[in-house]
Image 1 (cartoon, protein in one colour):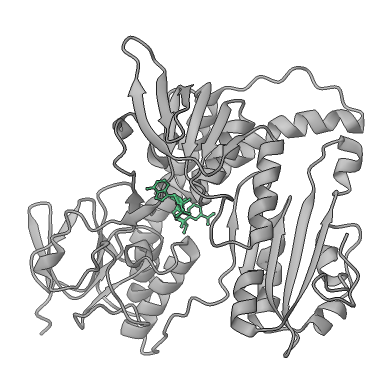
Image 2: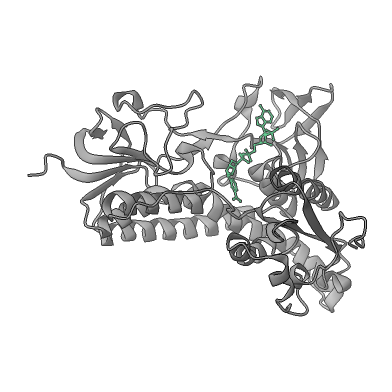
Length: 460
Ligand code: NDP
């Protein structure tokens, strides 16, 4: 007789937790999951999905402008932020319902409450204590704001999705994924956007050419990018709706909103994790091995709470591999190599594999193929926005080990080409592939001359 209420209890019904719960249940496990907020997690409720909807919304401004070059006369367009937020909320509500149904149809018991550890095999949900043979921590992450005086006046991405009105002037703090994406959203929707970042190019960790190129294009679109800039203090003027922001160089900027996008931290607060015996790093990260197992044999963790690679598809992959390993009888470890990703900045970035600098470090000799061009559409639209494409090839093996694109459809293009990079295809195999004309992506199979060789022709 099984002494536990469930075979698996999942803390957190986000991307990783829901996938793990469903797959474990499909393998025959008795599964429960708890969630204090709506089901779906950061990605669905206050992350990737609503963000992408807002990105679509903000693009229309340029589309209306570009249409003129193709013979259209467009009446002066009007935008309603409340209408956009209401439409977004309807879609998130629908998705929440979809996730609820998924769990129900999978036979997973849902506790719509916060859960916390009582012991290594027991969790408190509401006024109940529930026991489980295995426990999965999938509580995700939450925004982190540095302790700058006045930072309590600022918002994070959590609040940005539900602002009552579009701010006229907004300061974005940070140079990562979220800062670049929201700077583009607010700029496209008509706000006056300043972005403050403490280093000399946005998107640290990305290929250097990508960092410089996307920063330049963002500025061309009207974002005031303040590099090597640090916010020192935020002050609300008495009787005024505006905020005065003082920077380390002594300058002051008046804005209506300040948004911090200065990183996210693992969501372990209130979990009473010490009752479980699970070890947590000083930064809150739950430490796990390649099977997502913590130091306690029957307790696992997936997704942002482990802070390995904080991307939704990675959390889903980790959750699925965990469920297959523990309940499906096939041990599946997780590697985080050659994971493609995108920044939905404007223009967007798509990337897979090594940056030029990392490839040089890792492989020694490399060949770099690079191209910058004006997309066909902009020959008539008149827009000056260019596209950057870069291929990194390990010279010894001739394998393509990195692809980086900045430009329209970059995420869609890189998703496809990521299969080739993950499969270890060579530059010759790229060259043997016939392009589709006229597309931007054909450039990736037609670049013939490395730009970093003395004997090579420089890319245009
Ligand atoms: P990131 O880690 O990408 O960026 C954080 C930014 O804040 C960096 O520019 C960092 O600067 C800056 N920063 C950190 N501390 C301070 C400080 N004390 N003062 C000033 N600036 C500071 O985090 P995000 O919040 O943008 O996103 C969190 C994670 O969510 C991402 O890493 C990504 O994994 C995921 N995500 C993925 C998306 C996607 O796939 N499209 C979209 C959104 C999020 P520095 O570079 O100097 O450290």
